[in-house]
Image 1 (tube, helix red, strand yellow):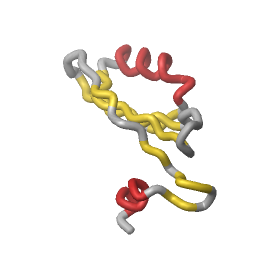
Image 2 (cartoon, one colour; image 1 turned 90 degrees about the horizontal axis):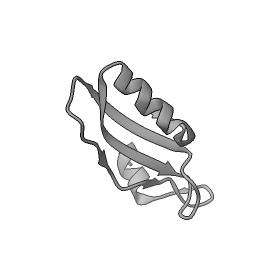
Image 3 (cartoon, rainbow, N blue to C red; image 1 turned 45 degrees about the vertical axis):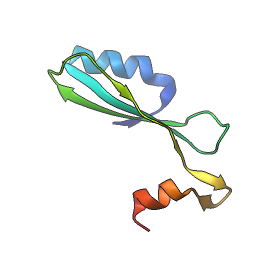
Image 4 (cartoon, one colour; image 1 turned 30 degrees about the horizontal axis):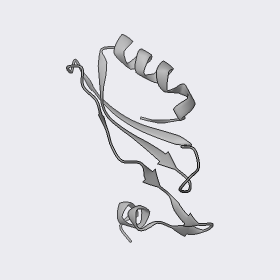
Length: 76
């Protein structure tokens, strides 16, 4: 799931209400030092309670220039 981080509590509550257990979470920041504008969450049905919070993704080094991690994700 890709969503806005300010809705994180609602997302986790809704997932658990439908017996989906969050397993991995990663924040996405547009630049270093800026607040996250996306959260990526992976959940499984009927899983046990445990979540791994992974290192954040930074999208841009500077305006218009992606970080190396983004290029790896896109396969450039």
